[in-house]
Figure 1 (cartoon, helix red, strand yellow):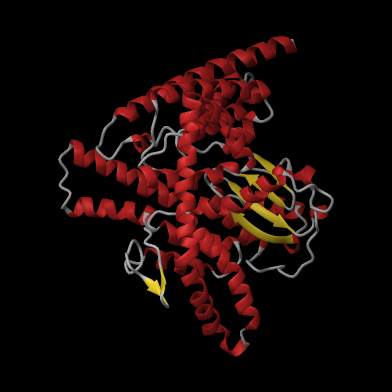
Figure 2 (figure 1 turned 180 degrees about the vertical axis):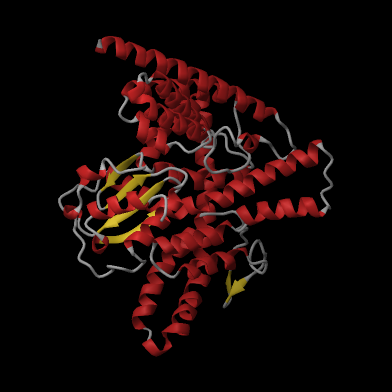
Length: 465
């Protein structure tokens, strides 16, 4: 029996059974279950799911907050429910959007719901690649590590596998999200970084010149390509005779998609990446150091609505374009630490034997948040405590102000930033300057968030008396 069998059975009983489930995925902390008919779901019962920190209602998608062990919960749920991809594909789906305005919130929900399953599975590769690169820089610049040795080559291979081949990973996960064969997207990503195409000058296809573009570590080019592939694949599959579909569908799909990708979409995605970097730099230059505290303060709510999943590609694009990110690279780091410190303050505030178990749970949530995973803390401990969230905002503003004043820069993209990821601030020369600044930012953030939370909650407690 799995650790999450009880939870899985409880969820299954209250979402209308396996026959009401149309899709099951997960991100870094949430188990995401899509249902055909929301009317068959017992939302009141799902608010008290065993071993879960809470639930986020996104219409037909239910997001159960699990924490870092969400993959275990995902596997246990699949095994107990018997649900498999493609199951209930033809079931009638309840339309919840009828009569609802397609406003900015609707658009954000759609984008966030799509982006999370695309990028969150890639986070482990980003963590390994980013941390290995930073450690290699320290070894080379401070400990005389020979760049020609096998040790350095292996380290750099781990970095290269994590970032240079990013188009393959994004192609795979995006294809999965669009429900077309995953290998198609991965194949397109591999074409982009193939040494016969990637950064090669003077290429043409049937006499049409192909712009010279370097696709390693890029995001937007392959995303545009896979999105175009979705429509091509659907069309080809529809017209292809069944007896030829096994080899005919992928062949014709790629013959159509690859030239369009190399001639139009790939360069367009690259220009988009460069444009994003330019806009972000303009934003920093216009607003100055106040950009950092503002973004850090709103980041927990970006996580809440899933908007943060769209920040990763922007940060990656900025690092690829100019070598560092001075805008979006710090907001997650500061915010996550503020959430962790606030949650620990809430845990300490709990008194009495009846709160002993909750105190231990919140303490674990707080430590996890300090290491970069905040959703259990945010949903399990803070969202129902407005005074605590005021403490989080104070800590994030204070830390962001210090980061803005000193121009804190992130040089390596690492998922789930926190106290374990200081090395993302080591530059390509091995300089530790911004690591020290990041440590100061962390101390200020933790101190202000913790103290202000205690003050706000103490005042709240006195008023209650």
